[in-house]
Length: 543
Image (cartoon, rainbow, N blue to C red; front, side, top):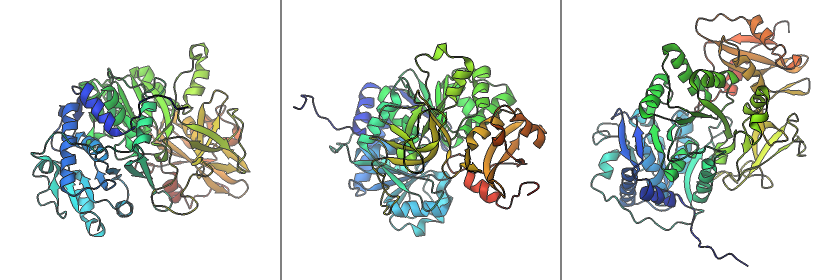
């Protein structure tokens, strides 16, 4: 027997229609290259998304065509997000911080027909355009004169493209399984891999993001997504904010600038923001240097890398800002877990609470997880046993876009994340390493993330990374690489002594190397691969 419920498709079109109808007055504020602080409302945003749909239709767009973007977080990028996807196209967000060779591969592999480009990335594309045969036109995301003499073939400015077109578009009735967006992994090994999202997946993912024990968005929030829109759907914030009518504040090209972020938070009364730890280190550094405040800010969601306890404590004790761990992947749309208090939270001791808070949290509804040993056997959820983390669910990648071979598909209905993790009896997941980053010393695993968090708690450490370095007896031993805080002369012996009593004695790094800076990926994460390459000639003292 079937239920007697109405059937409607889960599409981003319904998200846009709902926001336009019920939250049309909610604000969208953006920092852009041509307007220092652009301000308008959802109603205008979606009218312009309709204008874009008309423009793309006039260019000959067909359902399924890929529309590439190389753009910051701002209102024009938001319009492309909705305007392209809701007319049945695929919004292909491209990370402009990737190597040119990777961007070349990604655009050609996706066969993008148009590229929507922030003016800042015009020089990058001038050198690539002759290698991008599928791209028919470059659209410069700026005012009417933005495309003049830009050096890109058939270039047109975004505002010229939209000028005079109607603010309503008869959107097609799409099947919810229609593809709507595309994002490529950063390609740390081999070529980047494409993850093709469906309307259904992103609508379900948006519901998950909105839940109280997840991002807990509401119309009363002022949300500033620092996580870039060119990477993993900006963690679903553009969609979730539209569903509930939250005010959006986009930092544009200033997303890594502590001073700019502080000014936006204060002037726009931002209550919630999200991004990788390096961004919050920059903001905290600016606050400490200047004595400035972030009075409206209540929550920061951190993902991409583990957030050190010292950073969380600094925000909470000095600024009253709650820092919340999250974890996910490009292949997961991206949310997998969020760290929210349990029902018995208030009965736990302070250190018990911290032990849980430093984990990435529990899976949201819609994500199933398991950890397995090298033979594929499930590992106990005791908070101590390590295993390879696998996931499955309705917004998790089942296969990579246009990729053949053994690693193109999820195995037995489970996706191999490449993370090593523990899960405790409550279901809290702790990511202890990437599979390729785990340190195996004398046959035993050592968590580089735990060591990095410990090092970051030292008052003289600005940033830390731990890698496994070759050792003649133990195969590998931990090597700690540290960026000192300005004006602090912390020594090797002082740092190593700091680990005593905080981790198992045999986990303590064998040496410390001080560096001016650590390498990061295009999405702001520590790049252990590049660090290992940089330290390839290193030898431990006495070996």
